[in-house]
Length: 88
Image (cartoon, rainbow, N blue to C red; front, side, top):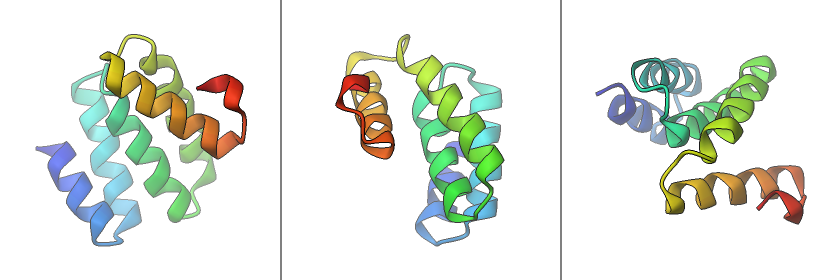
């Protein structure tokens, strides 16, 4: 439920609420790489760069154990953000 509500808040531009809810989704499922990625994006848009860095690092750690498509999506997003094709 936290993930769905977080995505809704993200889509509505409520960045702080989205980051909070998405981080809660990761707290409930510690392997939820996509929730960490969206939490990082929301935190960035809310100019909460400490949370952004924390969630990007978490997403990077979780990507290795995520299902193939999710791991690839997370690594591609990180490579794009950091402009480093080697990360993908």
